[in-house]
Length: 288
Image (tube, rainbow, N blue to C red; front, side, top):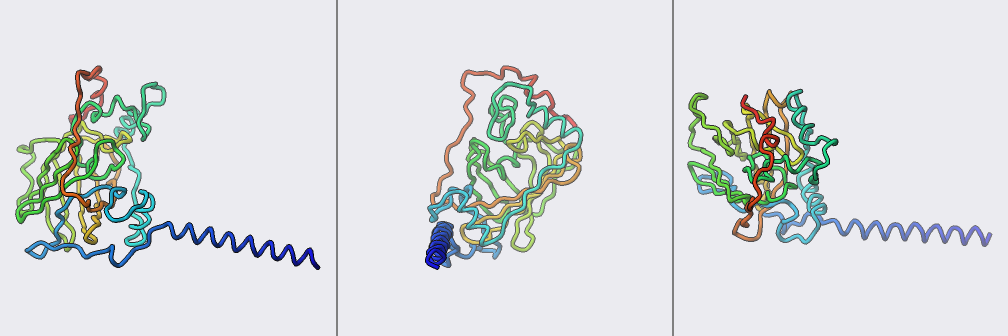
């Protein structure tokens, strides 16, 4: 009888201890607070105002948490964002595997790709895909959105690149007049509270992400920007490229408003080292 009683007491204490540990763990996860979620701003014309300096979630203001806890905070408010893996064509798969060839002994980055083949490692400018979504890429950082009635400007930390998105109703230039560039030609329109950006005319040299996915000159981007509250921006990016992918590739991210005004000065400096093997670097550059 005594042994049974002692065993019961021991089990009860064990359960209570586990409950205390669980409660302490739950309390470390930030819960949405009424005073932490302020309404999104509006421009004088009544449209959502996307203006501000937007950083990755682990740089969010006012919440002293790790990046993972910040993600949990946003998921509790707005849900987890889906992110697909690309469905590559044979052309896209060949180039992707070339950038990740395990038989090569050269150094690799955190994504497993061969660093020496990443054009960004040689100061080739990033394209919008890397700047918009790929938070883990070195030197990507944040960006400032400046919204005016006729156009939206995005000022990226990386090399202080400026991108303009026309919202005055114009279309893209005819194909024969389209000038290919690293930022491409972007036009925007409002779909309710969402800014929809359409971009064509992108050069094919930059990788699309840190993993080594690439594109052709037929790449077409659609971005959807939605300011969910004062401090949170939701961005969806759809990449369509019939040469590189068998279907559109959809990617999502949250961005958070920074509590300082200036975009940091992040630049690529090649120094005295030249491209040692430019032919290898652009071995699969697309002219299609």
